[in-house]
Length: 343
Image 1 (cartoon, one colour):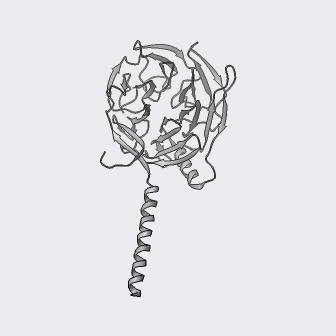
Image 2 (spheres, helix red, strand yellow):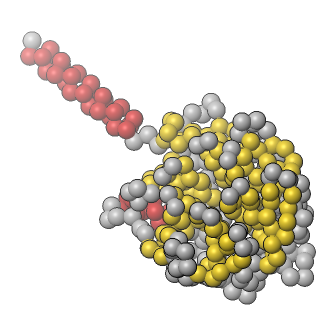
Image 3 (cartoon, one colour):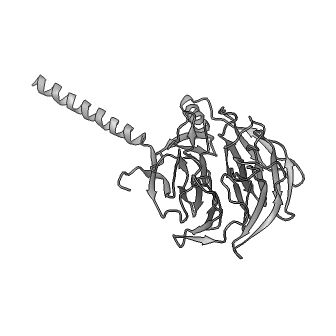
């Protein structure tokens, strides 16, 4: 009888431990699911630009390993397909920057090794209501590529990048109402090229990138100043939790990654990690807590120099390169879904 009671007790304890283990496993499940969607309409490429206006993303330019491209396309989330827009009228290029302000897209800078001056400094504006491009002349700083750009309110901002001689930290504000550039307070971190920027609630966050092959842990918050005054920069990093800090460090140690924002959540996808290899990792930044965690890795081929965009709170990443391979696939990311290997 005693043996039966002991066996029963052991069975209960084992069941309790198994239940706890299952619960713990479920609690620690890495969220995020990727599904393949409509591919990019143009040829496979890397280093393309993209900007969004309303429910539509516009993307173009880039390099396919042999040629630089001037074609551009739009994708309206309500229609679900890509269609050609008027080609970019400037020199074809890769690694340009882009941003959108007040219903128009702005594209400039970049790189074309076939030109005498490989680094480009011109800027252009695209009006989707007329399907026309217009020249804005030259950027306020030096011609360059691998810079970063973003828009806040009615202004665009461009800075950092490589100009053929130097890695830069200067920053410039563009006013579409006057089509003029004004230099503002420089990026205070280490000089970088191939970094990234994303905007949450009127604040930009700048990080990743490299200088002379070196990576750093700089991660800065940019807040525009009032009219006529300079913006402010604040260094941001996670708290003292070691796990959080380790994820932050891994997220920053990369270049040519892509960032997408949905609400107060930002996601850094792919790029070239400090190992020197293209990466599939996805890091999540919560702009309300400054916490970092990981999501399910990108399910396409590892890549850098991709495009990322958000339409109607739906997140997409596509194109890019891994070594000599270029891509035209586009994937949708659902960060709150559990991973499914069937889609």
